[in-house]
Length: 197
Image (cartoon, rainbow, N blue to C red; front, side):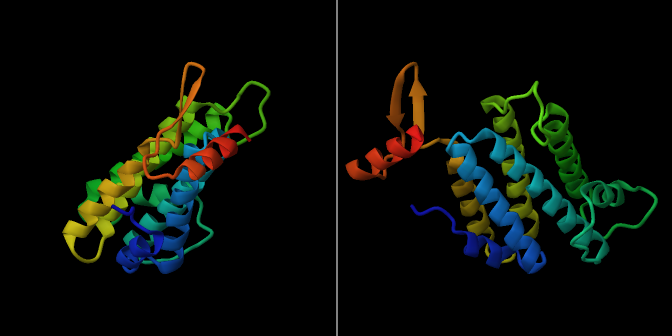
């Protein structure tokens, strides 16, 4: 089974999501997944932060109806979490759950040191995994909430996105193992060479 393609996903979430924001969101998601699978921890965490910024703008735009490409994550989420105004995004708890996860991921990366040059922090698998899994959950929520069209297709797309969990290369003690089953011998050699740098 072929995995969901970016254009297919963008087509089914835009509209209601602004097309530029939908493209940016999917691009950051794919970039983060690619970096994570390649064990490139720091860029995966940076992509996760950019994903958070874009999704915060999407929620702000969808809830207020005002598209603002420069609005900060904090400003967007403060609006979403403000209980003293009328919100259009229903059910309300969907926006609040996403806002809480976005806050957590964004602050975690910053406070951990993934965003700034730090002598005390080295990007690692566990931090990257936390960011990646949180962003995967957010992406699946975006599909569940904003998908336009056949609900069977969104369920299939979510299942396909979850297939990103297995890295191409697994390291078991001192043995490297190609874990993908869809590669020719030549492709496996190329993957191992790429992994080795």
